[in-house]
Length: 386
Ligand SMILES: *Cc1c(COP(=O)(O)O)cnc(C)c1O
Image (spheres, rainbow, N blue to C red):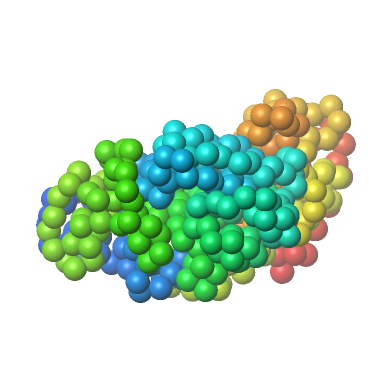
């Protein structure tokens, strides 16, 4: 029997070409062939984020949380004020990191399932001045999408730097880093970027690099300090050997393949495919009579779907879904954890993957005792998928 598809909000299914790179003999981190691959990956990352040539990419061994740590550790100084746009679980983590480095946090919190509008942010920014605003592009615990273009414009207008946690959004949701003025956009390898877990990635604007250069206090983390990493990233891009701490060589090779696949598809096509797949899943879920955590589809993510369990069903039903061919995730947001589940559909996900997931949810619900007419959900999904 074929194995079930991994359709959680990361890690995801990776392409055969990406997995083949993981199995290659590991070269030296200063092998000329590897230096070229790392240099190309840095250049491609900039292009995936639609950042400018003067934006600085970093590829680090670690997870998405390290990318968050790296951004905050380098841009916050003790006593700085940060406004954290809070749309769920990972916004709270960002607030904790800011506090760990001595920043003062103000939370602008949305109830679970709701977003924060640019107008709400504008109002909050008139109360106080902030050195930093942080935003989560897609909150993985609620499936809520924020308006990065609108929110960033408000924050920049108020003179703050903007860090966006794009871990569940990068290479899937529309993002134009340079045009929208995002100072740091960060992600992890295992989500839509399509590479096994183990890399934290960020791209910083010239203004963010200036803020870091003009610090009056040392960076409070040793491993995250851009003072060590900037020369390394610059050296790889200049195709020169250098060393601070050993890079995750095979992961970087796999990442380079995935970035190439993403850029070959084209960013506008990548964004449009995620919208299409998401519409298909959401239509299928609605056809089964299930509600979703985001209170309005206009602010629902395109990388995952968060259906609420219908009456009489709980997380126990996910084992049936797995037997029917799709591994899905339970809830994550502490306030509503037991009320919903999550379907990831990002990265290399295809039309047939999302149809598999919808069919597996339908069959799983029936096996758990919830009456749903066979085929209705698939028809609704197919109507959206075309
Ligand atoms: C997954 C995720 C993270 C954490 O990434 P790790 O790789 O698990 O450290 C942070 N933010 C968001 C939005 C995420 O989805």
